[in-house]
Image 1 (cartoon, rainbow, N blue to C red):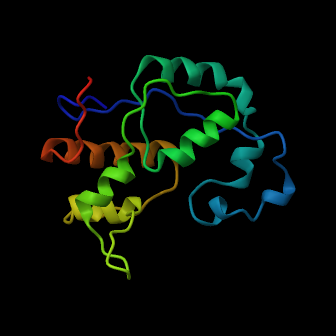
Image 2 (cartoon, one colour):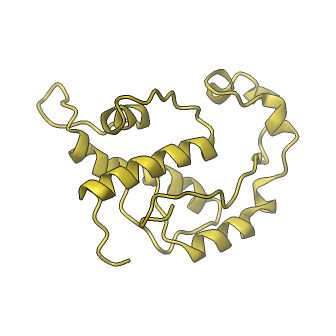
Length: 155
């Protein structure tokens, strides 16, 4: 995403599978909660076949995610490392959205909660598909950036 104007472009999109992927995953959460089908993954190339391409993209840009500890942990456990990290979108959305928890503290919003806070008039249901999720999360980041709630002092 371009922080000057909010434009986004797709840099990478692929469905891949883990070496252990097989029939035991047919009932997995992702197949019940998105439009991804078991057969889509079954016929996909292994992650290692795209790992180098992903690393080249990550090396070229500043990178973040909504709950980046999860996403970056996944990548790092597979040998892809993020060098130029930006602040976590979810971390910044916590203080921007100020959704109270039972104990009076603020909770970390999920993507839909953050979307509804920043774009209350635009319906969004998270698809749990990487590209669609990334596009919406980029819009959340851009809105916080424009409002001064996502500061980047080193770009």
